[in-house]
Length: 81
Image (cartoon, rainbow, N blue to C red; front, top):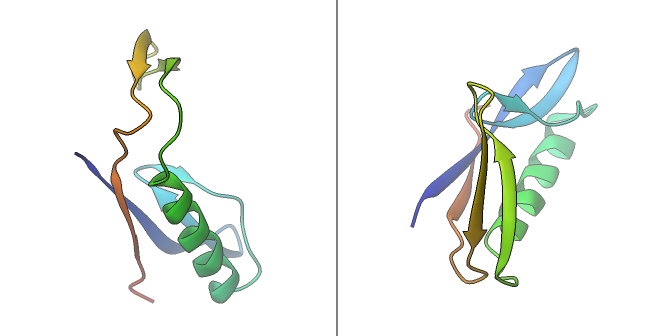
């Protein structure tokens, strides 16, 4: 099982959370970004249905995989602010 970290950061004149190099929308306050990150983190761990997924990696290549509905990562929120 993998780990996903939602990090709270200042971004674009406000606050956001990011996963890797990807930023969320910008929120007016730190507390709003933190609440949104906690919600996204909790939903990331919810089991779902097994289904096919298609995604593009950082180099632009497309991939097709089957994602098992019960194979969810551990997700947490990192708040250094």
